[in-house]
Image (cartoon, rainbow, N blue to C red):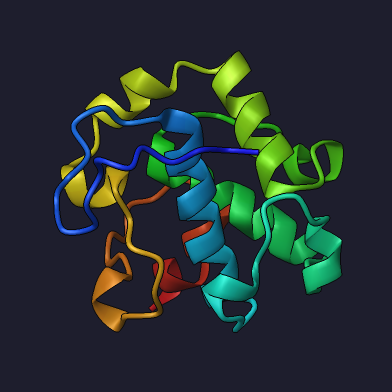
Length: 137
């Protein structure tokens, strides 16, 4: 059971960023957009296949995550670590997420969990699968 810091207020930016929680929040946001789900229905301990994530969606999500963190990740990340919780834990244990977050702006590190169109990236120079189709426009 996780206990949230009771002194933290929603309208105040967190000064001490927890990389694993940040990745979990980002994954919830991305998964909700990719699979047209409500973010509050996604549980970090549930297998991603339960939400309808197939192999194409999983590779796309890994590509988006690579783009966001500017890291090379295994294509099988979400098959080897089948929940958001386990995938984020794996990333936290095997990659320097703090260094990756240092290269991002504060909006990217503290993503809001919503389906707002303004949160979608327009960067067409991404390296992963997540932005493949936009390269041909």
